[in-house]
Image 1 (cartoon, rainbow, N blue to C red):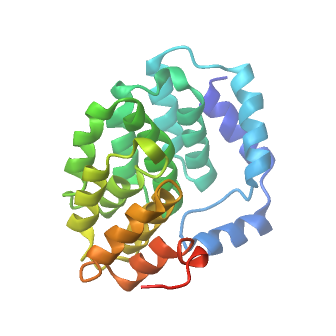
Image 2 (tube, rainbow, N blue to C red):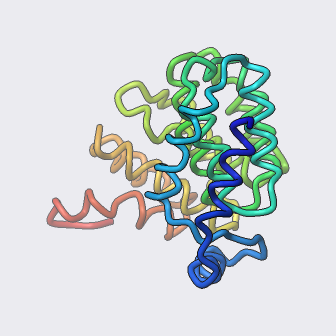
Amino acid sequence: MMLAQRLEQQLREHQEPSRALKMQSYMKTQQAFFGVPAPLRKKLFKMAEKQAPLTSRTEYESTIMQLWQGSHRELQYQALEVAEFYKVFRTPESLPLYEQLLLSAENWDTVDWIAITLVGLLIKAHPTLESTLLRWQQHDNLWLRRASLIAHIKHKKDTNLTLLSDTILQLAQEKPFFIRKAIGWVLREYGKTDAEWVLRFVQNNQHLLSGLSQREALKHINKNRSYTL
């Protein structure tokens, strides 16, 4: 039995209908859930992977897409666990696959996983791929625009501040909550590396940044200061 089939079989064997309804309600989605909690889902993944490991890029991509196109949300989570687990295939060649996942994603939970862990760490390791983020910030797709921001979240001292600044200012006046929240989030996270830079950036761009973005950006910084903006 192939990995995707094993994973789906295990999820079906451990499904909890009452939990599934609560998970579906929390995520505000019409997509069905099996009701399998994350710790158990990860345990099941490890078991299945040992029984049916992937050995080629073709298997990697086909397994991810088979799971991603499944009927239940946990199948998408398992697709991303496959994508994350096989570091040998997390190379520039996989970026089109990750973009395809973002374009077909339905909610923030999978979008953020793809953007931060898969795309963000890939671009950190291969800075020449930053041109992709420039393209995404101009894209019609909301999730790609959000990804162009939050892909920076784990870059810390290696953050390309010119690119991050340009992206924020490009998207700063957008109305969608998921863009405004992302701007504040990425600034808040970079503030753990350089709080003074974030404070100056927010002060210099108050007229452009939404109140939500500013509050999120300075949430932790203001706790350690005697004043706020």
